[in-house]
Image (cartoon, rainbow, N blue to C red; front, side):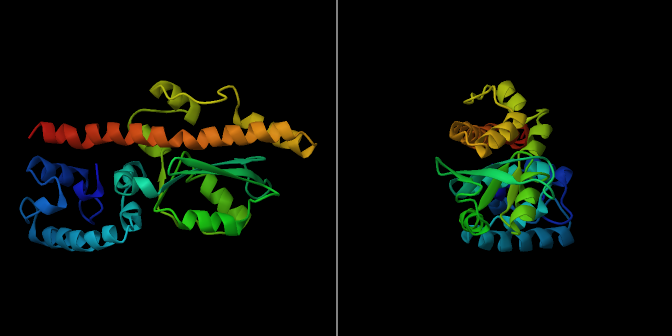
Length: 250
C-alpha cells in the first residue's frame, strides 16, 4: 500500500469515510472525483492531494507521517523503502538522564553500520546519517530510542518515524521484538542474548574485554537488521487487512 491510496491524513477523514471512498472505487488519489463526500470535505481532499503530489515528488513523507495515527504510518513505507533507515540502540540503563548510549546501529540499503561510544558515536555523525534518510523505523523507538538519542546527544531527530510496535499491536502482535519475531518466523543471530546481557557486555568491555564488545555489536546489529523483514511482513499483512479486504468486496 502506498500513501496515494490513503485519505485519512486529510482533516475530517476518518477510517469510516476512507473505507466508504474505497468501497465506491476511489482507491487512489487519481480516482477522486468529488463524489461520496460533501463539498467542503471534497475541497479539502482535493487540496490535500495537490499538495501531496508535491511532497512525494520531493521525497518528503513527513506531512503524511505527522497526520497519520502511529498505527497507520506504515502506509508511507512503500513510497520510500529504499531511503528508509532502521535503527536500534543499546544503553547502560533505562533513563536517558542518568545512563549512556553504548552502541547505535543503522540499517539502510542492505548495509548495517554500528557506532560505538568512545569511538565514533557522536552527535554530528548521527545527525549526518539520519539526515540522509526519508523514513526512520524502530521498535519502541518513539518512547525509548529517539528520546534517548535526543537527550544524550542534544540532537533533534526530525526524520519521519514509524515505530513498529504500534502497527504490530494492530495485528495483535504483542510482546517484545524477539517474541514477535518468533511468532512471525523471523530468524535472528544470537537469540540467547537479552537487553540485560547488553548492559553486562558493555561493562565487561569497559573492564578490558574486547570480545564482549564484539558480542554486543553483533547483538545490536541483529536487532536492527531484523527490523526490515518485520516491517515488510507487517506492512504486507496490514495492506491485506486494511486495503485489499475492502477491494475484494467491491
